[in-house]
Amino acid sequence: MAVNYKSKIKKAMQAVGTYKKEYDKAIEICSGMLCDYDEAEESGTEKFTVTDGGKKVKNPMYAIREKLRADILVYLRELGLTPAGLKKMQQQEETKENKSKLVEVLGELTNGKGK
Image 1 (cartoon, rainbow, N blue to C red):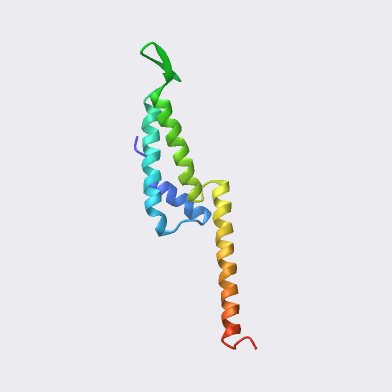
Image 2 (tube, helix red, strand yellow; image 1 turned 30 degrees about the vertical axis):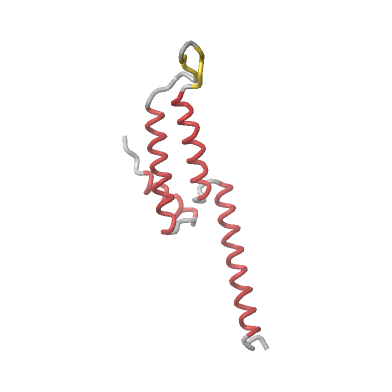
């Protein structure tokens, strides 16, 4: 079952107000990782460990899933799709707006308009 994660991520970002066209490549990468994660999930790895040459080792499929899970979380956070990521993006936007207002006021003062 192929899921169109690109459009789902984009819609989610639009819903929380973090979508920008500049993020499309990150969305594409995250979408690919989500598809890979689905594929790893479907592989049906029930065992946490496997036997390799007589000793127990971590099942490689679990290692893959753990890495994908961590990477996906990083991307979702950076795209503003986690509570912490959304808060960070909102704070950055507020800081940018405050700086813009300050630059505008300072510009008026230095141009003699603030008299």
